[in-house]
Length: 64
Picture 1: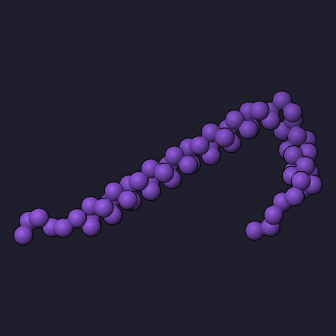
Picture 2: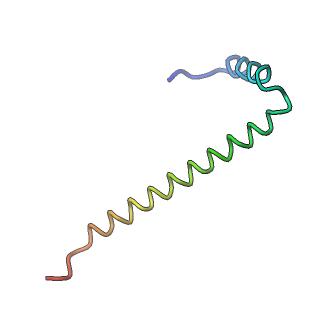
Picture 3: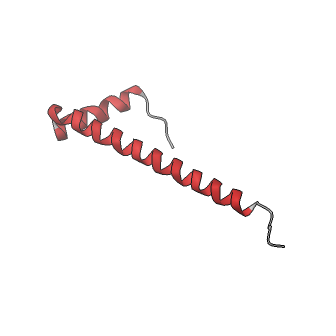
């Protein structure tokens, strides 16, 4: 994956401003931030569930 320099980011920002307009940028940023937050929370919950299931499978069987 290539690294983006400041010139590339500036060009992308300029194109986004042209397409969406300056008044929509805060709304787009808010939506993007919320999406990232929800993704991180879902990933964290999935990891915790997986760790809990793995811990349960590693317990010794007490029925014997």
